[in-house]
Structure formats: structure tokens, C-alpha cells
Image 1 (cartoon, rainbow, N blue to C red):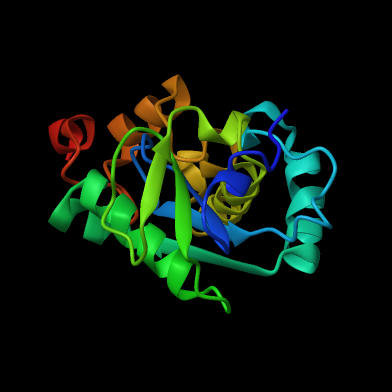
Image 2 (image 1 turned 135 degrees about the horizontal axis):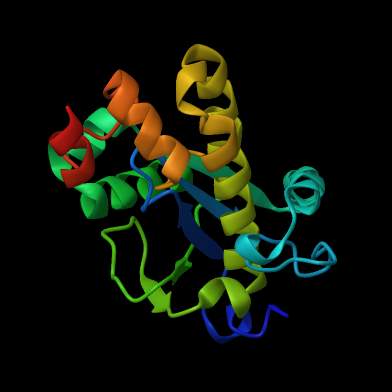
Length: 196
């Protein structure tokens, strides 16, 4: 399980940063940034993909209540189309960090890419399984994005966004073939371009 041992190696306050939604065909990319209180680390923190939706929602409330600072940032499908998914992910991360009420001295970022962030950083491969701060950030990013896609399902019920959250799924492909893309699809992505 992730803990605070990585955070202790760097000058504080240390912020964990992670994203959700780089792979889907529709919807925004979301990022979370969290500075945890070492004395109040929520129990059960883990890589958001290893948790149930109910556990993520419970932990989201606890993270927001106990963290020293937290922020969530988004980059829209249109921004993804304009600047590409990698740059849009960095943009969402910077927006998440801009929401922190404490300025971090250092950031631990999930993955192996060195994004352009407003403080020194260390990429950590599989960081959401190692760092409690990154795990917390992954939960905030995932819950926020899922909430957006559930709302999109009400606006565009024919696509089934509540089920697949915009990812590649047989039902998503069938809906695209039947209806074409909608305003939240990433038009620059090859499968969407081919159907558009």
C-alpha cells in the first residue's frame, strides 16, 4: 500500500500529482494535486484503479477534509484536440496545482514524464501504488472525471457514457457508428476522425 516514505525524502510541502482520462475517446482529462497532512493520512489510500467507485467516493470526502491542500484541474476535449493529450495533461496538472492553498516546494508525479509544473518535481513510475499523496491525487482526479462523464450521460444518453466513461467499448463504437461524434468527443483521435 502507498505510504508517505517518498514524501519524506524531499523538501516540503510535497504535493502528489496524478491524472485520469488520458486514454478515453471522449471527455476531459482530469488531474488532482494533494498535499497530505502526515498526521492525518486517510486509511485505505491506493491507486484509484484498484478501488471500487464507492471506496473512491468515500476517500474523496476524507481527502478533501483532512489534506493540507488539494486541487483538481481539467483540460477540455477541445484543448486536447488543439494541443495534444500530453500537453493537455500537463495543463490540467498546472490547473490542479493552481488550486492549492499552500504552495508546494516539490511535486511527486505519477508516471515517467517530466511535465512543466510550477515547482521542482520527480516522476514516479507506478507512483499511485507507492506514494500516498499521488494515490490521493489519483482518487480526486478519477472521481471528478467520472462525475463529469455521468453528467454527460444525461446530456448525450445515446452514447452510454455512464457505463464506459468515454473509453473504448463495443457499445461506444456502436453508438458512434449510429450517431457520429458529439461535442465532448476528442475529434483529433483517429477512431473518432474515422467515424466523423
